[in-house]
Amino acid sequence: MHSQKKKISIILVFLFLFVAYVGFSAYLFPGQIILMGEKNPIKLPRFFVLSGENIHWEAEHLTLEPGENSLTLNFLGIIPIKKTQIYLLEPTYLRLGGHSVGVVLESDGLKIAGFFPVKLASGNEVWPARDAGLQVNDVIQYADGIKIKDATTLQRLAAEKGEITLTVIRNGWAFETKIYPAESRENGQRERALGIYLAEPVMGVGTLTFATADGRKFAALGHVIGNGETETTGIIQSARIVGILKGERGAPGEKLGLFDSGGGTPLGVIEKNTNLGIYGNLTTPLDSPLVELALYDEIQTGPAEIVTVLEDNKLETFSGNIDQIFARREPTNRSFVIRITDPRLLQETGGIVQGMSGSPILQNGKLIGAITHVFVNDPTRGYGALAEWMALEAGAFRIEEQAYGS
Image (cartoon, rainbow, N blue to C red; front, side, top):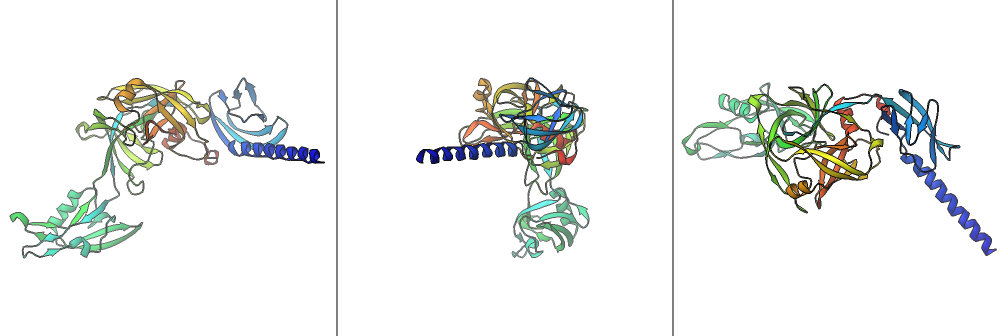
């Protein structure tokens, strides 16, 4: 009797594990997949196969008809588990980046960082901005109908007028208020002041990841800059790297760069600041080598290459390794773990440093992604964003919305 119960228990445990494996494998396998080119690798769970019309297997590569293909995921080739849609597209080619760029984001107005009192000739102090009902983190969009993009414009209006009507954004809501510049006579000089500290535009050094095949649209950084809400436009400029602050455990390093204004003409104009980086149009098309875009199912753990700049404007290629790949469930800038293995790069930078964000990552000659973050406690490692997500964001290729993100 005891032996029979033991056998039943073993069978029940086996059935539970069987159902759990099949269910979990089906859950992880995406409902929609995008492929490019004639032959494509598909990572299938063990004991599963795909079936459907116009499907052919050669070794581990799947050959399909161009366009949309409806397939079924089968356990042991006989038990249908899940329907999936596979979209076969033409290969996409991109202009390889790696160039250092200076990034300047312009707010949709200027953010208030604080207030200060204005000292009058009588010795009394007044607070024009606070008296106007302004608060820290308010964004001044317009002053007397004039778009405010820099503090100089607001200072000029304050010097000319005794009353200014401000259009202000607070927590997503717009309102108007009047502010009265006060005349300060400190240090023997007379000038009108508003008593406001304004936040400077977001500035920094990053890396251009790629441009579209025509060289006109760009993608850079692989992560959002600033708060990602009001700071949505700006420019990129070419930058020269003049030094490296080496990273250590607990203290990320940094590329030290100088912006090149190029005679006042920006390298490009930023149109989008997203979780997957900054995107926009280049003023002069990028003329760099074309590289084929790799999709998620082509990426493997193992050796990879990073293209970036360590000195001046010189593009160099360094060795790395893809240590871990996460499931593709939704657009994220943390799709895989990249580890720096190049002895020289480790010697000069300690690994991944600030300013390296956006550096393109290649594997088997294809663009698989970009560096986005560094591990603070291990600067030799960091996260990367999938190139396919970034290419879609840049408009390098298009597909029906429902075919992505599952």
